Amino acid sequence: MSAPHALVLTAPGTNRHPDVMFALQQAGATTSSLNMHQLRQQPRAIDNAHMIVVAGGFSFADALGAGRIFALELSEILGNSLLSAAQAGKPVIGICNGFQTLVRLGVLPGNYRAALGQNDVGGFQCSWISMQPTSKRSVWTRNLSEDIYCPIAHGEGRFTGSDETIKQLHANDQVALTYSGRNPNGSRDDIAGICDETGFVLGLMPHPENHVVARQHPQYHRGRTDGLGLRLFEQGVAVARS
Image (cartoon, rainbow, N blue to C red; front, side, top):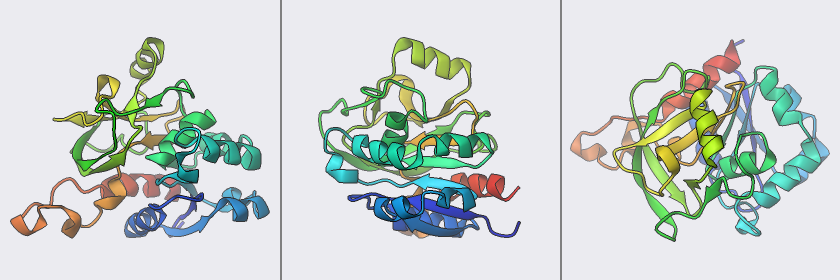
Protein backbone atom coordinates (compact mmCIF):
# COMPACT_ATOMS: atom_id res chain seq x y z
CA MET A 1 0.00 0.00 0.00
CA SER A 2 1.30 3.47 -0.84
CA ALA A 3 -0.60 6.04 1.21
CA PRO A 4 -3.24 4.75 3.64
CA HIS A 5 -6.44 6.74 3.91
CA ALA A 6 -7.50 8.27 7.22
CA LEU A 7 -11.16 9.12 7.80
CA VAL A 8 -11.70 11.96 10.30
CA LEU A 9 -15.08 12.06 12.06
CA THR A 10 -16.43 15.43 13.16
CA ALA A 11 -19.48 16.88 14.87
CA PRO A 12 -20.89 20.38 15.38
CA GLY A 13 -18.30 22.14 17.57
CA THR A 14 -15.32 20.06 16.40
CA ASN A 15 -12.46 22.45 15.66
CA ARG A 16 -9.24 20.43 15.45
CA HIS A 17 -9.99 18.36 12.35
CA PRO A 18 -7.94 20.58 9.98
CA ASP A 19 -4.98 20.25 12.35
CA VAL A 20 -5.17 16.46 12.62
CA MET A 21 -5.68 16.10 8.86
CA PHE A 22 -2.53 18.17 8.30
CA ALA A 23 -0.65 16.00 10.81
CA LEU A 24 -1.74 12.80 9.09
CA GLN A 25 -0.79 14.17 5.69
CA GLN A 26 2.67 15.06 7.04
CA ALA A 27 2.90 11.48 8.30
CA GLY A 28 2.15 10.06 4.85
CA ALA A 29 -1.61 9.47 4.81
CA THR A 30 -4.38 10.82 2.62
CA THR A 31 -7.35 12.24 4.50
CA SER A 32 -11.03 13.05 4.28
CA SER A 33 -13.60 14.10 6.87
CA LEU A 34 -17.27 13.38 7.44
CA ASN A 35 -19.61 15.20 9.78
CA MET A 36 -22.52 13.42 11.45
CA HIS A 37 -24.99 14.33 8.70
CA GLN A 38 -22.66 13.01 6.02
CA LEU A 39 -21.88 9.89 8.03
CA ARG A 40 -25.59 9.08 8.30
CA GLN A 41 -25.69 9.07 4.51
CA GLN A 42 -22.47 7.03 4.25
CA PRO A 43 -22.37 4.79 7.35
CA ARG A 44 -20.11 2.24 5.64
CA ALA A 45 -17.46 4.85 4.83
CA ILE A 46 -15.25 3.58 7.63
CA ASP A 47 -15.05 0.22 5.85
CA ASN A 48 -13.06 1.90 3.08
CA ALA A 49 -10.74 3.77 5.45
CA HIS A 50 -7.44 2.35 6.64
CA MET A 51 -7.47 4.38 9.87
CA ILE A 52 -10.11 6.37 11.76
CA VAL A 53 -9.84 9.57 13.78
CA VAL A 54 -12.35 11.14 16.16
CA ALA A 55 -11.25 14.75 16.16
CA GLY A 56 -11.06 17.15 19.09
CA GLY A 57 -12.97 20.30 19.89
CA PHE A 58 -16.23 20.89 21.71
CA SER A 59 -18.70 18.58 20.01
CA PHE A 60 -22.27 19.75 20.46
CA ALA A 61 -20.88 22.46 22.78
CA ASP A 62 -20.18 19.74 25.40
CA ALA A 63 -23.90 19.76 26.17
CA LEU A 64 -24.83 17.15 28.81
CA GLY A 65 -21.13 16.42 29.32
CA ALA A 66 -18.07 16.41 27.09
CA GLY A 67 -18.40 13.93 24.22
CA ARG A 68 -21.74 12.49 25.35
CA ILE A 69 -23.92 13.52 22.39
CA PHE A 70 -21.13 12.79 19.92
CA ALA A 71 -20.92 9.28 21.37
CA LEU A 72 -24.70 8.81 21.16
CA GLU A 73 -24.67 9.90 17.52
CA LEU A 74 -21.81 7.57 16.62
CA SER A 75 -23.45 4.68 18.46
CA GLU A 76 -26.70 5.18 16.57
CA ILE A 77 -25.02 5.51 13.18
CA LEU A 78 -22.16 3.03 13.45
CA GLY A 79 -23.15 0.58 16.16
CA ASN A 80 -20.05 -1.50 16.93
CA SER A 81 -18.26 -0.62 13.71
CA LEU A 82 -15.41 1.24 15.44
CA LEU A 83 -14.71 -1.76 17.64
CA SER A 84 -14.87 -4.03 14.61
CA ALA A 85 -12.43 -1.78 12.76
CA ALA A 86 -9.92 -2.04 15.61
CA GLN A 87 -10.36 -5.80 15.82
CA ALA A 88 -9.62 -5.92 12.09
CA GLY A 89 -6.33 -4.13 12.66
CA LYS A 90 -7.25 -0.57 11.73
CA PRO A 91 -5.66 2.14 13.88
CA VAL A 92 -8.24 4.36 15.63
CA ILE A 93 -7.41 7.51 17.58
CA GLY A 94 -9.54 9.94 19.57
CA ILE A 95 -7.94 13.20 20.65
CA CYS A 96 -9.25 15.38 23.51
CA ASN A 97 -13.00 15.56 22.85
CA GLY A 98 -12.49 12.50 20.66
CA PHE A 99 -11.00 10.67 23.66
CA GLN A 100 -13.99 11.66 25.78
CA THR A 101 -16.26 10.42 23.01
CA LEU A 102 -14.54 7.03 22.68
CA VAL A 103 -14.74 6.45 26.43
CA ARG A 104 -18.45 7.31 26.50
CA LEU A 105 -18.96 5.11 23.45
CA GLY A 106 -17.40 2.18 25.30
CA VAL A 107 -14.60 1.73 22.77
CA LEU A 108 -12.04 2.62 25.46
CA PRO A 109 -12.17 1.38 29.07
CA GLY A 110 -13.46 3.46 31.94
CA ASN A 111 -16.65 4.45 33.69
CA TYR A 112 -18.51 6.30 30.95
CA ARG A 113 -20.00 8.73 33.49
CA ALA A 114 -16.78 9.72 35.19
CA ALA A 115 -13.66 8.44 33.43
CA LEU A 116 -12.71 11.97 32.40
CA GLY A 117 -13.72 14.57 34.95
CA GLN A 118 -13.25 18.28 35.53
CA ASN A 119 -9.66 19.47 35.84
CA ASP A 120 -8.64 19.65 39.47
CA VAL A 121 -8.11 23.41 39.16
CA GLY A 122 -11.80 23.70 38.36
CA GLY A 123 -11.52 25.34 34.95
CA PHE A 124 -10.28 25.24 31.39
CA GLN A 125 -6.55 24.69 30.93
CA CYS A 126 -4.56 25.67 27.83
CA SER A 127 -0.80 25.19 28.03
CA TRP A 128 2.07 23.11 26.68
CA ILE A 129 3.00 19.85 28.39
CA SER A 130 5.31 16.88 27.95
CA MET A 131 4.00 13.34 27.79
CA GLN A 132 5.92 10.10 27.81
CA PRO A 133 4.99 7.09 25.63
CA THR A 134 4.70 4.13 28.01
CA SER A 135 2.81 1.27 26.31
CA LYS A 136 4.20 -1.51 24.15
CA ARG A 137 0.69 -2.87 23.61
CA SER A 138 -0.46 0.28 21.79
CA VAL A 139 0.50 0.29 18.12
CA TRP A 140 0.63 4.08 18.35
CA THR A 141 3.33 4.20 21.05
CA ARG A 142 5.18 0.88 21.11
CA ASN A 143 8.14 2.15 19.08
CA LEU A 144 8.38 5.56 20.71
CA SER A 145 10.78 6.43 23.52
CA GLU A 146 11.20 10.23 23.54
CA ASP A 147 8.71 12.56 25.18
CA ILE A 148 6.16 14.38 23.04
CA TYR A 149 5.75 18.11 23.67
CA CYS A 150 2.37 19.54 22.73
CA PRO A 151 -0.52 21.64 24.05
CA ILE A 152 -3.55 20.73 26.10
CA ALA A 153 -6.86 22.59 25.79
CA HIS A 154 -9.65 21.15 27.91
CA GLY A 155 -11.84 21.60 30.94
CA GLU A 156 -12.70 17.93 31.46
CA GLY A 157 -9.48 15.98 31.02
CA ARG A 158 -8.68 14.57 34.44
CA PHE A 159 -8.58 10.78 34.22
CA THR A 160 -10.59 9.53 37.18
CA GLY A 161 -10.95 5.81 36.54
CA SER A 162 -11.81 3.57 39.47
CA ASP A 163 -9.10 1.75 41.44
CA GLU A 164 -10.00 -1.45 39.59
CA THR A 165 -9.86 0.27 36.19
CA ILE A 166 -6.46 1.84 36.95
CA LYS A 167 -5.09 -1.47 38.20
CA GLN A 168 -6.31 -3.31 35.11
CA LEU A 169 -4.95 -0.66 32.73
CA HIS A 170 -1.47 -0.98 34.25
CA ALA A 171 -1.63 -4.77 34.33
CA ASN A 172 -2.62 -4.94 30.65
CA ASP A 173 -0.09 -2.29 29.52
CA GLN A 174 -2.97 -0.05 28.41
CA VAL A 175 -1.62 3.18 29.91
CA ALA A 176 -0.25 4.51 26.64
CA LEU A 177 0.93 7.99 27.63
CA THR A 178 1.65 9.74 30.91
CA TYR A 179 2.33 13.36 31.76
CA SER A 180 6.02 13.86 32.48
CA GLY A 181 7.29 16.68 34.64
CA ARG A 182 3.90 18.31 35.24
CA ASN A 183 0.41 16.89 35.57
CA PRO A 184 -1.81 19.72 34.27
CA ASN A 185 -5.23 18.42 35.31
CA GLY A 186 -4.83 16.04 38.24
CA SER A 187 -5.22 12.82 36.25
CA ARG A 188 -4.71 9.71 38.35
CA ASP A 189 -1.25 8.20 37.92
CA ASP A 190 -0.46 11.07 35.52
CA ILE A 191 -2.46 9.31 32.79
CA ALA A 192 -2.62 11.31 29.55
CA GLY A 193 -3.79 8.54 27.21
CA ILE A 194 -4.93 4.92 27.20
CA CYS A 195 -5.43 2.19 24.63
CA ASP A 196 -7.94 -0.62 24.28
CA GLU A 197 -7.11 -4.31 24.68
CA THR A 198 -6.36 -4.72 20.96
CA GLY A 199 -3.79 -1.93 21.10
CA PHE A 200 -5.21 -0.38 17.94
CA VAL A 201 -7.41 2.23 19.64
CA LEU A 202 -5.73 5.17 21.37
CA GLY A 203 -7.37 7.99 23.27
CA LEU A 204 -5.44 10.95 24.67
CA MET A 205 -6.23 14.41 26.01
CA PRO A 206 -3.20 16.42 24.70
CA HIS A 207 -3.03 17.62 21.09
CA PRO A 208 0.03 16.16 19.31
CA GLU A 209 -1.49 17.34 16.01
CA ASN A 210 -0.52 20.88 17.02
CA HIS A 211 3.20 20.12 17.05
CA VAL A 212 4.06 18.25 13.87
CA VAL A 213 6.49 20.72 12.32
CA ALA A 214 9.37 22.33 14.18
CA ARG A 215 8.15 25.91 13.78
CA GLN A 216 5.09 25.12 15.90
CA HIS A 217 7.28 24.76 19.00
CA PRO A 218 6.61 27.83 21.20
CA GLN A 219 10.37 28.32 21.62
CA TYR A 220 11.31 27.55 18.03
CA HIS A 221 13.04 30.93 17.58
CA ARG A 222 15.19 30.10 20.61
CA GLY A 223 16.37 26.91 18.95
CA ARG A 224 13.92 24.40 20.49
CA THR A 225 12.70 21.75 18.04
CA ASP A 226 12.27 18.74 20.32
CA GLY A 227 9.19 16.66 21.11
CA LEU A 228 7.42 16.53 17.75
CA GLY A 229 3.98 14.94 17.92
CA LEU A 230 4.40 13.90 14.30
CA ARG A 231 6.09 10.69 15.48
CA LEU A 232 2.83 9.47 17.01
CA PHE A 233 0.98 9.87 13.72
CA GLU A 234 3.81 8.27 11.79
CA GLN A 235 3.37 5.17 13.96
CA GLY A 236 -0.35 4.99 13.22
CA VAL A 237 0.18 5.51 9.50
CA ALA A 238 2.90 2.83 9.40
CA VAL A 239 0.52 0.31 10.95
CA ALA A 240 -2.27 1.29 8.56
CA ARG A 241 0.11 0.87 5.63
CA SER A 242 1.28 -2.61 6.70
